[in-house]
Amino acid sequence: ASFRRRASAAGSAIPPRAPDGHGPRSPHETGAAGSVGAPMERATSRSIHEVLAEDGEQLREIVRNEPRAHLAQAAAWAMANRMEVGPLETEALLARLGAATAEEVDLISTILWALALDREGYPVSRVLPFLRHPSTAIRAAAVRSIGTFDLSEATLALVEVAEGDPSPENRAEAIAFLSLRLDPSDAVDRVGRALAREREPAVLGGWVTLLGRHARSTSAAAELLWTTVLDDRTTLSVRCAAAESLAARDPRDARRIDQEIGLPQAVRTSARPFVQQ
Image (cartoon, rainbow, N blue to C red; front, side, top):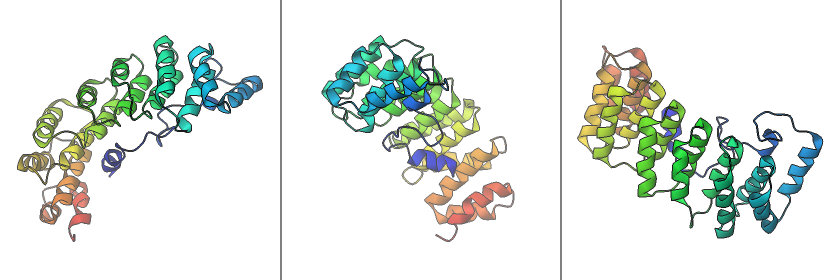
């Protein structure tokens, strides 16, 4: 079920902070140097509150020219939370993004989030390189930023992340964004390769759930799901995800899985809610 929830959230607007604690951090959670968890003195806290209260023109000026990363981050945060990101804001955000250092993780992550709110002028070519950034957190922010746009270059980039990012969490998140974008034949091919080489159950579960979205439209997807359900070498949680996808497709598949004595009880239980539909 967790795989299905992750996939269903893929197309939603990026929240200021994801429910699992990932994503851009509030300026109140970053220290004076922008480091996570560093204590903030009262003066710094007041400075942040002052920034958050500024008007649009001042926010753009702070993003561009404020040397202290945590205050520039606060300005970018304010832009995004007000949903006021247009051409002028994007220009300022990109200027600061180009000047940011690799250590300014929270600032970069917040800028990437804010840029995604410019639905007309999203600078996809400027965001793509951050999918290969050394920081896992920045790569995650780039996935969430670019993942909300149904663009061909975004889809290709997300496939690269899903198949090759060092972080299992980033791979799983990219798969969730891909769940409504890959055509059936491409989905079958990529899931088949993932089943052969991916070792993280959560990532495999994401691929299987993605495949389940195509099980009604192509027999190849359903066949691969059945292969996964019946394969004793596959991790139990992944087999459960495949069983759930098949059962949701057709109550007859749900009954077959539920009645298959040779299957683990957990796999059979995954299909049971769909038996009576």
